[in-house]
Length: 59
Image (tube, rainbow, N blue to C red; front, side, top):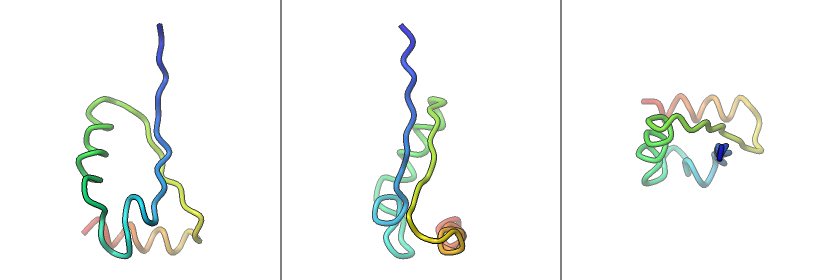
């Protein structure tokens, strides 16, 4: 049996809150990558706000 799985992850309030990454997020994303499980980030805010926060979180 073929099980297709993937995750859609909400950004603001789930992946991060303000300029702080949520506890467990890095481990969770690492596990998804290690197991080859696809994921995408979603949010309802303008793109420029998302890119700004991603740049902060990447530091």
